[in-house]
Length: 285
Image: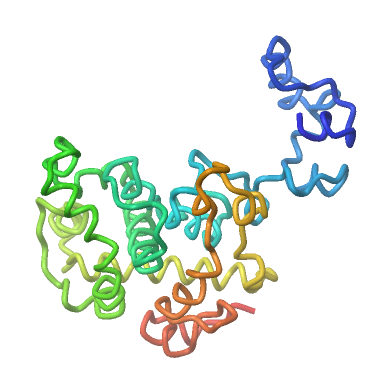
């Protein structure tokens, strides 16, 4: 629609006109008419017709579900996601930044550490065969049921300050080699079903291993740190003109993210990190 409005592609689509959208879905499915181009996705569409500023994607995948300009952690997650603009592989940090809790979405404080924690958690839960919505059980009900209670507002205010300890725990998962089934049921369930000596720490380490393995595959396929980016609309244009903070401050978070992950400044997992994860002696070339 923006391409059409700005004279880049005469496709007959316009904002506010939705009578033909159902038919358009069919055309995309069978690659008929303009559906032939639309089926190729946003990245290829913008490469053909121009209008890259309107192409809201990361690594070729369109952003799912959430507007990140007032959810800094979700913005960082989209940018670093191995799959591109995926809120699940991106860590789903919006669950803290307004969807579940009311942690300040405009601050970058602590967001690198929490994004990593949630990305590894989503990875581990997905690998275990569970739906990621089961992770909602991690959030104590009292935090959700009374969001305006003074104590809950204080907790939400303090959470970003725990980024330092969260990052430390990420790099020292041995401190979580126990189970608390009322907090995180997944490793306990794996232990009961399989007999594996699974703990929260080992579960999170498995998630980190999977996330790094995906990263290595992407690097083999040509991924560079410059691909860990967001569309300029999200980093330069304000979502709300009266709120100067309503844009993703990615540059403030990305190097902290790499450092906490044990990656180089170019976003490449170090040998030290790969050795810790048991991934060092494999050929990814």
